[in-house]
Amino acid sequence: MRAVVKWKAMDGSGRVGQCADTDGAFNAPKVCDYDFREGPQNYVLFTGFIQDGPRGEARFISYAYTGYISAK
Image 1 (cartoon, rainbow, N blue to C red):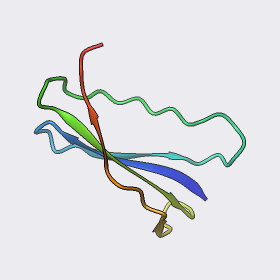
Image 2: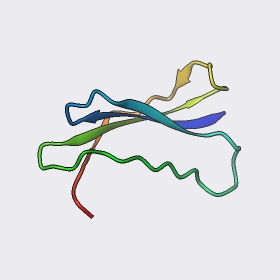
Image 3: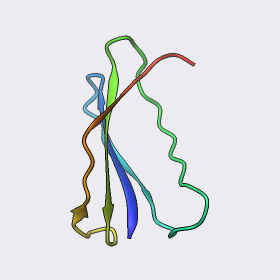
Image 4: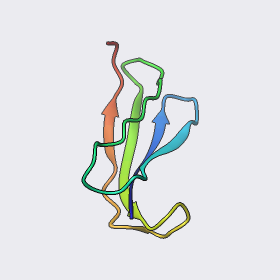
């Protein structure tokens, strides 16, 4: 099983993607690094789930969570 987070940039770009932790349990977490367009009206929607392999059915799907994008 892999832990997956799908994301969708709500900044007018139409970008979508996902980050998957594919190296099993009981080790360091997977770190994914993406650049998003900053601004007070821009945000990213995140949904998490688990999946059996890269093409397995998504299970235990979470609610969508919002992450706002601000300057560092």
